[in-house]
Image (cartoon, rainbow, N blue to C red):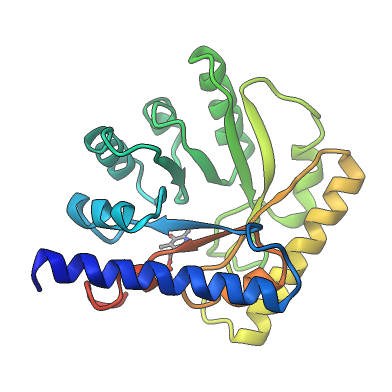
Length: 237
Ligand SMILES: *Cc1c(COP(=O)(O)O)cnc(C)c1O
């Protein structure tokens, strides 16, 4: 594939996903701008990541901190551009990661939450975070168990961070019906937590290439799309 063909294919993929998102929103009576598409660039190098930004995607998700550091450093000429950390973040990677001023979707323990808050105060910034919830209850999955979230939200206001909502993934190998139920459960949990704690939680990060339309129907406000955007350009993961 030539560079031009690659760009064209990524342009088409980006247009297609946007179209699917718009149609789904229309279909379920939600506003056309009520979902943001986070382009997950974790499968590709800087060149293809740039191609995605050229197609129009200006919010990128990475699951490995080091790759986010490298790409954000290398792509400072691309503006506007914002970063989303969607994979597990170890405390010793918090400091460097905050320099990219990412939204962090994958906060999965009180310890990492406190570390982010502390470092953000030191850097004099405020970081938007989401609490990752283990909605399927899989032992192997990361994230807070639903019952533990109320106490995490108890200190109403913490310096350095703003808890904006929840992130969830459907469990491994769940069929479509089960996945849909898990998305619904996440939204209900969010609604309950808002009421119980008085903490507004407007964001729900749910939905990937295989299930984003169901996630949007359940109330997702951010979909994290990787493979669909690189269809025909890289091996499908
Ligand atoms: C890789 C990844 C995605 C994107 O998955 P696709 O199925 O390729 O769209 C979304 N969320 C998280 C947390 C991921 O690690």
